[in-house]
Image: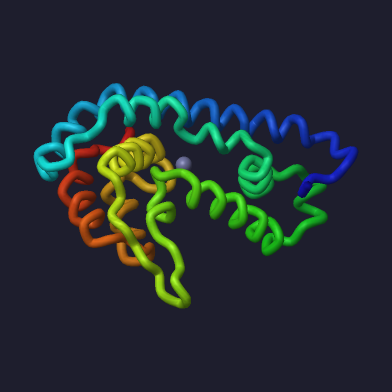
Length: 186
Ligand SMILES: [Zn+2]
């Protein structure tokens, strides 16, 4: 949809983004193995009335970001982060940003490990509902996996978005209580 026909670099760039995705998903599984039990314990201690459904969380981790391989999500991310030379020449950065936003919005509104999944527009108002404890743990695992690159620690990332994104107070309080347990990847 976004890519140019007869673009000799396209297959290579698609393979690069796919390799990035494969690597991210593998790391999410490793980080969950290392930090999952601690995060679950902590979550259970701050919300004793809703113990984490570990079976459901295991399943969610196993299918983490698999939707990103579907073209509607894949193409916008790929064009943003792994564009070919032809695409860079043909498309403005604004156009690439719009394509990326469409893919990101689709992903984040359909994947419950994103804050965006838990809010909706009612007229001009953003309504937030509390995030499930399982989704919070998966999100924190995701942030720990992405740390050490664009941001150092999950707490740094949270500081940069906590007042920009719409978040239910209950969710905010739980994240605040857990986030400092995550050291960030070296
Ligand atoms: Zn995701």
